[in-house]
Image (cartoon, rainbow, N blue to C red):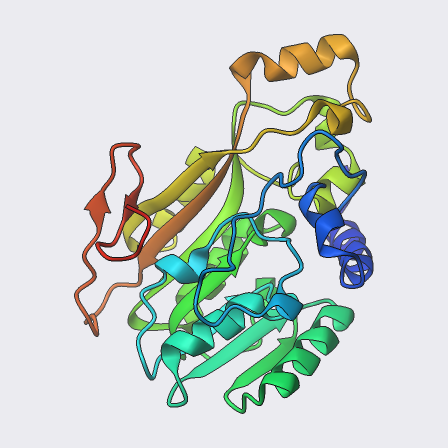
Length: 293
């Protein structure tokens, strides 16, 4: 089993390469890592193109949800995006928070930070900044953010519980987060669990859904709500790199589920606004008027 630092170095090196990859390649692979599928064009990503603030140059096709769509960002808010990549979610957040707000993107890959800063300069945004740093130790002071967002990043971090406690620290009293991530129900085959590319590809670094939600509750958050959930299917031509035909059939038998979830949670304290969450038939939730219902 690799150490936390070894895993971080794998992710840092891989995402330095991904920063320069074609978006179509990222979408047809597992978060841009490993071989691309010829069976499925878009494995994990959701379509951002109809969301206001979307910038095509900043969309590398690496997400697994639309957290900024569900994040209830208000004009004047301070928003932090963890694992900000080329800046896509930051620019959508900036559309919502406006000129009076502030958006801070955090990423530990220099190539991504550079790409995001170039995109921000092109857009002329003076209230969006990008900081290089490890989200296990977010380079932001206590009680600073109204909202934290993140898109398919916590599964890449060895110490997820530490990141969640850091989110709690940087949020203001009554602040909240909306995070999209990959989680598991059931155990991955050993070959997938141990493969470095599948770790960088957002799969083998994922933890059990129950454990993930448990970390959020243990950190002190309230109003924990699943805003969206969808099943992720790994194409057989990718699985074939790691598993035998028999193992693929076993994997596809339904004993293991891989899911993209978008989770909302609030830090205790006086809330700046009343956030209405509505139950969906699927068991997920969303806010009225958010477009997900």
